[in-house]
Length: 432
Image 1 (cartoon, rainbow, N blue to C red):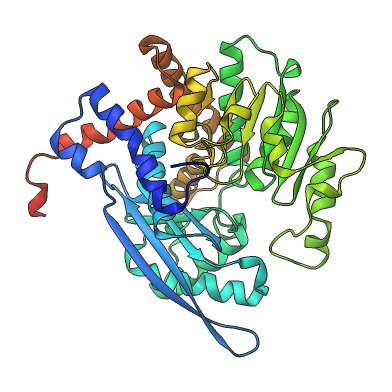
Image 2 (cartoon, one colour):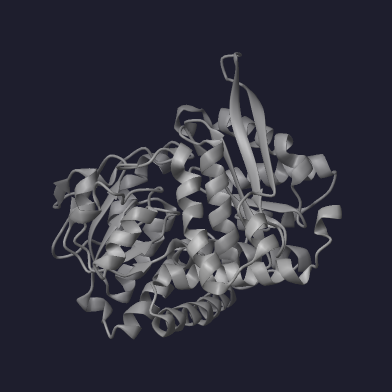
């Protein structure tokens, strides 16, 4: 395998990290077998009546990966390159990350192969509702709880939640998270992934005796998670020197303020009531323009990866000059590149810890919905910080004690919890 792998190899690459974990923590028999494959994979076709009267049919998937610890939990992405292999891999990572931060969930993920930016708002709503109708039989607060992911947001989740209510003939707010607050969504959910990533970075920086104002950060991506991470990191004093999106990158040695950049970028979105933002960070003034991938080679203290999977791979890892890598996206560093960074002594704060803020606050949304409660945003943010500090410190201490990478420590923490639950269920599960 060379360079940025295709989706056909993605799941094998993700699972390759399991064998080392199994051997290191002594996982045997049943647990090994159950963790090598998803519990359920569903492929669907989603017919959508277009505005011109024609019919298009979009392929979609929902995968549940190991529900030993609880119902499946994970996002839904709308993207032209979505595949079953990608969705399966993402559901695997979700299972691990939920266990890493001690949430009572298994892993889930969904996707529809579509370029949603080519759809009108009404076509997008029909697609969202059609997808829910297609997977409704395997959804529910105790079985599988979807949430936002790439190209889905609170608006799309609101449509999906409303459709599930219609199908259930009642109100089931805990069936979907990431909803608008007016429909039962949790305050603090929109910024949660970026806020959580900053908490992990702060905890690591404190252990390294590194001050925010002395730390330069380059951020690949400028979507929801990346923007809120950038905004909050800027407020904490980190110097954000570069950001990028799918159209290019911008750089300023003195540092960038994310808010004016986002204000410019989303102006047309608000003006025309669009679901997605079509403008680029490259419209910003008084900055140096870079090619998109040039950002990955900048000499910075922290490279934050907040785009898609497999951005650092065998062909470009040697050009990475950052002193540390923060994974806000899912799987942005391939296993081979990860090994090379480890050998070079470049710490990687792994996705299964660093980007758990979103699923943690989704869990809090689920709890609020089930209990009929509404928590203040300060309460949500405080609970997020407390959980991440507790689980992060366990991983940092384990990595130091066992002289392993943060990723290996995180995987061992998560897989241990899942494997223990599998073993405690006994030996007669195959008769269920």
